[in-house]
Length: 177
Image (cartoon, rainbow, N blue to C red; front, side):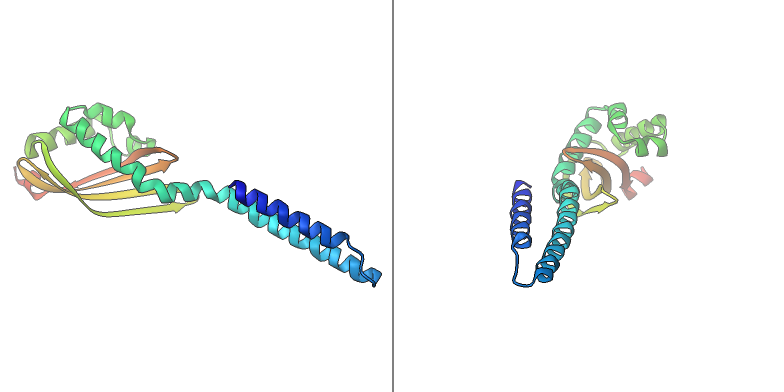
C-alpha cells in the first residue's frame, strides 16, 4: 500500500512540475496546467478507490484459509459435545435463523446416529465478496464411524475472523437410523 501512495505522490509532483512550466504561448501553458490538474484529480480518485478496496480484496484472497480452521474447530467441538459453544461462536445470522435448542438437538443427533468423525475431504469451495462482505462456502464429504454425509459450511470472513453463518448436513445414513 505504501508503494501506491508513493507512486501517487511522485506522479502528482511530476504533473505539478509540468503544469508550472511556462510555454512560449501563454494560454498554452494554462491549458497544460488545467489538464495537469484534471489528471491529478482523476488519478487521486482512482488511488483512493484502490486504497479503500484493498482490505476487501484481502478477505477474498485469504477467506478460504481463514475459514478452513473453523471447520476443524467445529468438528473438535462436535466430538467434545460442545454444541452450545458452536452456537455461541456463530454469527448473528445463524442465531437468528435457528434456536439454540434446535441446534443442540441437531448436533446431538449427528453424534448419536453417525458417531465420531473419521475422515473429511473437501469437495468444493467458493469465496465471494459482495458489498465489502466476504462469504466462504466449504463443502466436505465426511465419513463418520456409522455413516457418511456431505457437510456444507458457510462463513462470514472479516480480516482474520470467520463466523459460521450456516451449516447443512446431508446424510441418508443419518435419516434412516
